[in-house]
Length: 464
Image: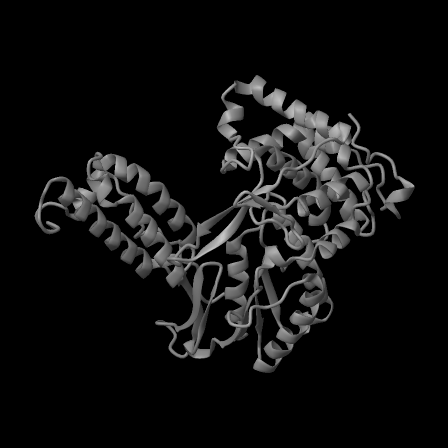
C-alpha cells in the first residue's frame, strides 16, 4: 500500500526534514492499523512543513478502510434520511455484504468522477430551552454523509497540525471541559473583564471564497477542492423547491465544523500575533470569549475581532455580544451551557473564585425533556419503561454538567423528576394528589431505578 506521501513532490512546496514518512512504516513501527497510520503520516507531514500543500488526497477517499470507517461513524451517529429518503437502516438491513456493496458503488462513482451530491433536506429543529424557537438544519443524504466523513478523516489531520491551543471545538482529544478550565483558571488569576461574543449565524454566513481560500493554503488537490465546492453549492430542498446556496457551510454536514474551524483559524492566528497582549482567547468553534484585565483591553479586543471577521463574511451579533465585569460577582456570563460567576470563598473571606453551573437555558432544556418523557400519554405504560426512556437523558445531561458547582441545580432537577414521576404514577393508578409521604417517596424512586443526579458532581478546586 502506498499513500502518496512516501516521497517528496515538487507541487507540494518545500519539504520538511523527514520527507520519507510513510503510512506503512508508521503502521509497522507503532502497531496501528492502516487507517490510523494514514492519518498520522498526514499530520506529521503537515506539522513538519507548515507551508506544504498536499496534492494527492482525493484518491485516499476510495480506500476500503477509509470508506468503511466513514460508514461506521455515520451509522453510529444515526441521523435522519436526506432528500432521497434512504435511511441508515435501509442500507444496513442487508448486512455487511449490502453495506460493502453500497460503499463499493460509492467508491466507483468517486473514482470515475461521476459522483454528484444531492440537495440538502431542510428541517427546523427546536432550540433547547427556548420554547417556540427553532433553527434550520440541512440534512445531507446518507451517501453524501459517508463521502463527507471520509473527506473529513483525510483533511482533518492536515489542518489539525496548524490549529492553535486556543481552539477547542470539534477537535480530536480536545473538549468543552478543557475550554471551561482555561476560563476558570484565567479568571481566578484576576483577569475579570470578559468579552462574551456571539457570531451571527456563523455556519450560514461563512463566505464560500473564504472557505476555499483557507483550504487552498494546505490543499492543492484539484479534485478534492472541486468536491468541497460541490458540497458548498449543492443547494437546499425546501417546500419542493431547490434553493441555491450562496454562502455558508451547511449546519448538519459532517464536514462543516471542520470548515468553520479552518476559517476561524484566521482569527486564532491574528490573535496569536497581536491580540494575545490584550487578553486570553478561548474558542469553541463559533462560540468564544476573551478574558482581559481591563475594560479598555476588552473594547480593543472586540474591535480587532470584528475587523478580522468581516472579510470572512462574519460579524458579531450586536444584541448577544456583551462585555461583563466579573469582579466580586458583579456580573456573569454564559459559555458552553454554563453560567459563570464569581463567588466569595467560604473559607477565605475576601477571596473570589469563578464558579459555574448549568445556565437557565440548560435547566429549561432538561426540564422540557423530562416533561416530554413523563407526559400523561405514557400512563398506560409500565413505569419501568418510562424510567428506561428517562435515565439516558439524565445521565447524558449530568455527565456534561457534573464538572463545576452544579449541586443545587442537580438537586432541583432531581426534585422535578420526582414530581413528574409521582404525578404520572398517580394518573396511572387513578389517585388524587401526589401522594408524596405515603407512597411515592424517594425510596420508591430508588426502587424504580430512576437515575439520581445528586452526589454526581465532580467539584474541582476553585483556587487554581
